Image (cartoon, rainbow, N blue to C red; front, side):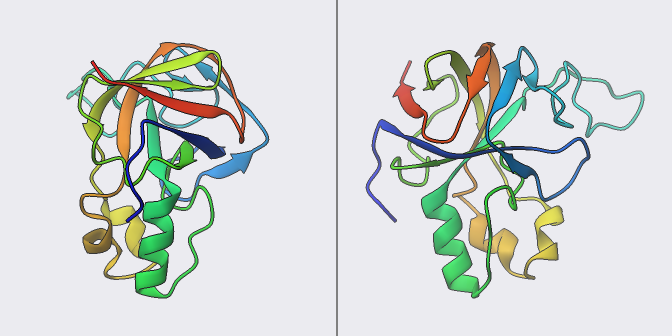
Length: 164
């Protein structure tokens, strides 16, 4: 795995109006207070809970390292283009993101700030790509976050880790 760094670059921004994978790369996305406008996960309520089990959404955005995706794709002998792992933001230059802690702040581009809510666990939807993909992504599927400041994101924008 590449060396961890406190800054990097956005490689792709992705969204999808439906649940599951993939999400689809776009030239830019508008990040609202609950996530990327038009994305399935952009909501004040966690959409993965059964009805009657309503809870606040703490997963407005999912951020994954390109380095992790490339490593897993190479290990499994498969192609994983941007958005295939369900990420909203694919970044490079920051290692596998395992050094990022809950509560840390990421500055994305010049406008958007997000607060990390968890290390992201791989889920069963990824099995469409390979039977061992969940195991391969354990500990390196990136982070989830809540939006603090809204704005526009584009590939090529900077990413900066502001540890709390």
